[in-house]
Image 1 (cartoon, helix red, strand yellow):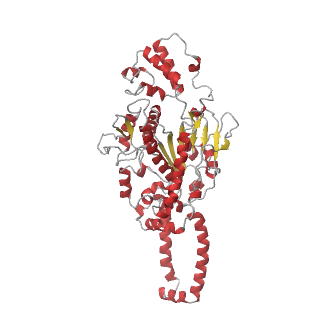
Image 2 (tube, one colour; image 1 turned 180 degrees about the horizontal axis):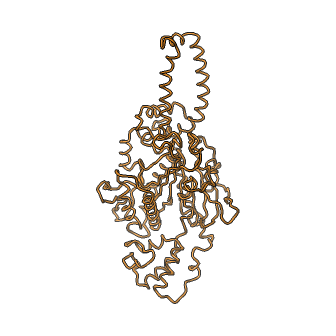
Image 3 (spheres, one colour; image 1 turned 90 degrees about the horizontal axis):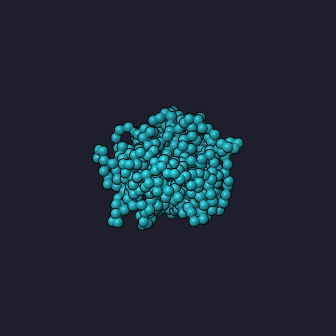
Length: 541
């Protein structure tokens, strides 16, 4: 939120998100390069060379503040009134301290003014009609003039952005459309970027702060439907369901329950591993989707049922209609309410092909949410009032992390909202930077098996007596064993190169081959050649 200048957010983020080079002097090594992906002359592309097991990574920023102009203090009044008139239990927890302060101020004025005069309200009315009234009006005008400048700078340029972005009136339509369109175009350009004849990027991570999370959520939701439809028109490299789909649906069955305690962190990590496996399975089939992770920091999405819609019931209806994607996604057949019945995230087309539905981007996109915790926990005097847990509204598959270990400024009301990228060197347990780097997992993606490795592994599998069509029970002897029923080529194509190298070594022993492994395969990932370079890049924005 707020009138950020170009690169202001990116300059703060890269120091927090990019680890220092272990082989150097502890500095972060990256280069500021022209933005060759978008048409922006104000934007830059920060390139961090491969280091310490992390592939070459490029950082971009989506700047939208110039599209959010003309905000007025009056834009806040409808939302402020709705929040003020809510029962305390229905006020967002982080805003309860503000809500209480407003009511105390209102009640204090109503109670205190009559006692300042001997005859109560009668004396007040006479005083207002005389010289005292003129003095009071002059003082009020002066104070309001000062406050208006402060409010315009601090409130109109921040929280009013959120209210206006979600405003459905004609006044805000063109602005909101321009912001969404710009972000979708950036993501599309990153997906389509080339290095020679190859894709420039293998993986895209979206990091968003405050209102940026709403914008990114809208962009991911829309782009998924577009890319999913495009993938459905192409012949897949392998027919059938992608690897990992059934496993993900089985895990999601427990996360979609509407009663009982929230899932623990271990279950969510298992679900995120399943999401990544399904993403690799889709990519092995030729699906163009490259976004693997969505990281939100201090976002007011935790009271989206107040901002997106007027009532929680209306919000729930939009979720059930898959207008608001959740993590895990809602079932295609809406069977998740039946005990023991896993959800369905795919359907079979008329040509008998399996396709994930358009409301399921978070079947493959891992979602991590960070916020500076409120204190007290149920009232929100300290901490980030505009950040909070997203599981209650957007699904139990989100990894919600309340941050408590970053010092007093991270607890200070108002200031905490701006502190998420201010601790680049604090890697202590529970710090925002340690959790941020866990979520980014910049070393998570390694180049997948080469065509030569796949062909050689297939020949070894055949000589060792394995089926080369579909993984069956005989594959249980491999370490680790793949999922039964997965097309063998899909499994091999999704495998990282080091894992393919280890598999080939294991198969050579099983097949008792006498011929040594060719040198270009035995080297594993090795140095990155110019033709391989784009396959080892990531992008974060």
